[in-house]
Amino acid sequence: MDNNLNEIIETKETFNILHVLDEFFTSAFELAQSSYDAVINSAFFENSVEVIRTIDDSAEGLSKIYKGIKAVS
Image 1 (tube, rainbow, N blue to C red):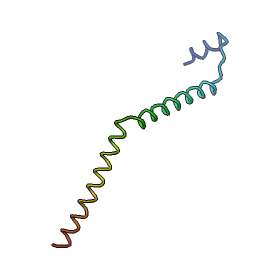
Image 2 (image 1 turned 60 degrees about the vertical axis):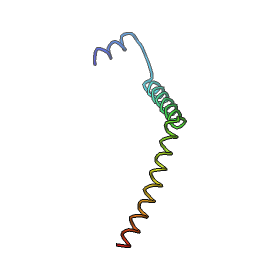
Image 3 (image 1 turned 45 degrees about the vertical axis):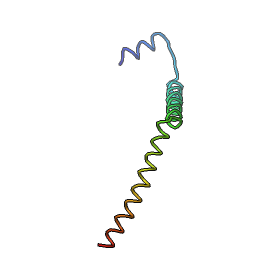
Image 4 (image 1 turned 135 degrees about the horizontal axis):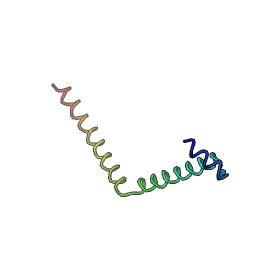
């Protein structure tokens, strides 16, 4: 670690660590945003939402049937 620091000082390279971190987090955020957009706009996501809605509706119907059978018994 000291060698790297000495190299930077000896070659008189200067950089602003905050600028480097800003660029890193900005690019990471942009990548996350584009990934999110790709997932949301994909057909797989839309199909998954439809399947989950169908399962939810079926579970609600089964719950009503179960409550009816339980009340009768």
